[in-house]
Image (cartoon, rainbow, N blue to C red; front, side, top):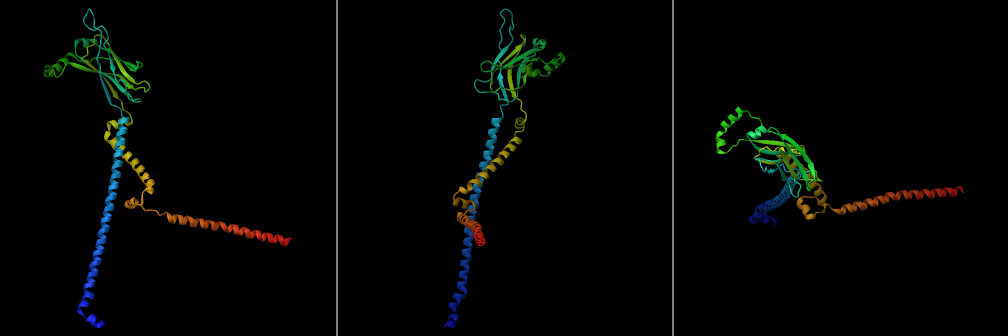
Length: 331
């Protein structure tokens, strides 16, 4: 019967052709399906990890940029403070002209401190003076300024000399001829700009911050078109680098913040990852620690220690018994 079953072509086709082909196809399909599912799972995990990493990196980068911006606007003061100076004087009753020194009160601020403490400033008075014959004949004159705190307390005072630049008659004629179209159209004027540096290294006192400035021109014959008070910060050290090389300082500052923030994030991550749930650890690829083997090891270690400690006691008891026997024999 076995021989007839083997000779039967249907049985031989089933055993030798159909079943091997079906088994081969099923094995290939199963392996391909498993590889595909594993690949999809690995791609999902990879995308998940890449998303988490990109979020952390972007957060660290923006935190570093924000820290540098906050430090820049906190550490760097305003570069220039410009205030208009409106000169006032007393007119003569009988004769034409000025019968007092032109002076002005310049209010720098009302409430807040306008100047940063421990920061040197240059205080300059910029005047537009016409090239009249009176100003040319005037020669030198004095410019005085007083820096006062709230309540009128004097903080600092200074006086400096000034005068118009000397220009010969030939130079004046050639200049007028060269700029004749501009002078006739009103684009340019026959005037000079005089800059008087009143304070070269002025530092504001935090206990008595400057709120007002008083300016006086000690000459009754000076003629002035307009006048402004310029307070410019004189940077040194780190502020000098941050102001004149902003891109380089920003790159160095953001890189330094990025390094320290990354170190803080990494240390915090390693410190807090033990408290994460197990499924998040599996998603992030963190090894889940099993506490049972550790407890068993501790228990085994305790048993070993107890056994090791027990031997000395046994040996001491046997020695005591031998000593007692020897003493009995002697007696």
